[in-house]
Image (cartoon, rainbow, N blue to C red):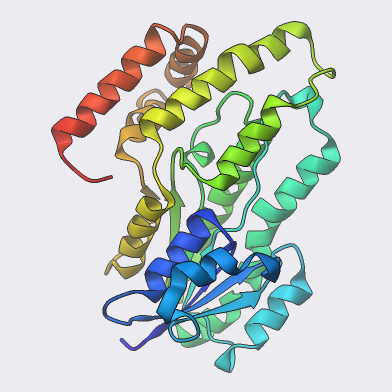
Length: 309
């Protein structure tokens, strides 16, 4: 197989930047990377990460996943409009009590996280069908498998992404097009830090005192402990994304964090849904005892496994 053109979205920072740079530096030169971002003024970190590969195996283009014209213009600029691999990474986050979040903000999140993916796939899918070849890689989340406290709307957007891809994958197979949902757990990025910084100063006047207290005194400390114990780097997620892209038979779903797998396995262990619900309730509201024990156990598994996550 010759050089494959990879279109990656959301490359100004975090996972998107790491994936684009890693593919561009592939030792076998298997990829020509089109790294995109909404604001080209933020291209500096990617240019630095690409180094000598910039304008060789990696080029940077403007693309706003919320704008059909922007997507079309970017794809039209590619030779024969060919996209062999789409890596949909662009996304936004939202945490906090539901009563404190506006419907307008929720719609904006879905416009990026879900409809952004739909717009991109609609644009590149006909070309992949024509060539009877392609791979749609979507950066989802473990929160697309299992909801988490105060992540109601973000998790809903990822559930939508998972349902869309699982449904589309059946049709895509008929045209020899692969579909993969990459599902990271906690990832330590500037994106995540900004979301949690904003949460610290969030206006909670729209909710009751008990919920506000739970958010500030239980959820935020809980999240910090989880990120400190289980968090991956963007480079680790990028490495596993490359493994998925280069696999002979890519999976439909791939969780990047082995330490988080026991959490998501709970959902499949009990079809009634009570087991994961009660487990997360205990971990969060009795976190000093249960959460710390759980995180210590997972760290022990990591050491015993001896595998690089």
